[in-house]
Image (cartoon, rainbow, N blue to C red; front, side, top):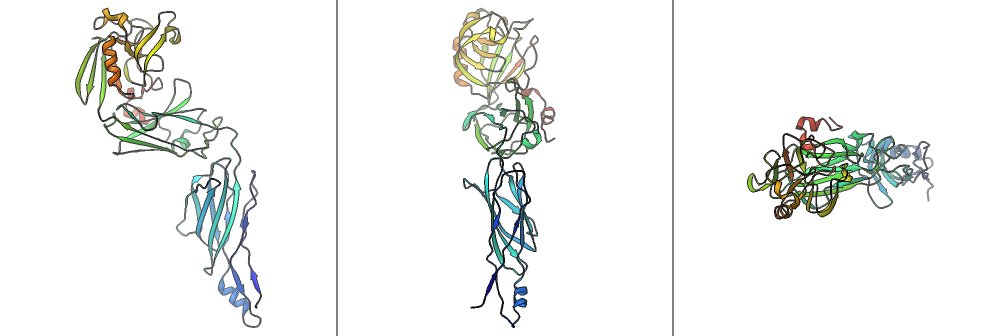
Length: 398
């Protein structure tokens, strides 16, 4: 038997400021050296193996692999749960980078098949673990997954912690629609005081549109004091097949329900009392939730002891407490005078009928000469009160 020599391919990993398992490599490359018969020449003909280098992998950055003296034939990066960190090679196949960032507190195994100068392939394996996140950011999505909503419903994300790097976060948010709907993200401060970003179409949704959000946030740093995202999020919803718009004229004390552009119901109402804090908001508010029978206490919205009662067919329009609801105690004012504490009141029968017809996401377009202002974008879903140009300017990527 002729002696064989096994060449080891070294995987170079600079020292990291994080805990990482030592990289190891094994080679399948061998050369036969026959004394007196050109063993060195045979070895040279076989070629030198490629040298593979894995860049210092850390959370929030892609994993990169390079080859010198050869090319990369295959790179596979897998976490402990079997998730593959996909990536792509450069045109000359001497470098590879993952499409996604490495996530914090995650262990990865890298398997690299490299092709040396003589065409011989060798395989190296290594592993690393990224440090755990000191702070973790989470989010709340609206509307709920697999729900059906009205034509005014935006896609809304409220973050648990501050988002300092809004551009980095927004880049990871992908909205797909069934009909190529034009829309844009816009950042704001939610009524709760938290950072929030909404995706709003240029105009109301077309009925029947299907919407999907892929928030590939795992491994994204939200910035100072915000922390890392340690998971991805995905949700989707469908726009109702009927386009409903509620138009409220506080000067005429009248509400009109339109379906697919046709008026199907006219309701006498009483809005907020003019001349003070009990006035209603104007502009477009979106039906946030159908809350049914609830207790309304004026002290919770800063109106002292004006009222404290159980109210039926309650439909929330703003976080600040404006509802459309049954108000039988104000029956004498329906269609005649605005005498509520800021809400849009109507008969119990009309309110129950409207409650059963509407969906969250249906817009209320409210106008009136004596109101306390336009619904702000963070006070519920008030973004429809901004022009398209104003809304697009609120994106972190414009």
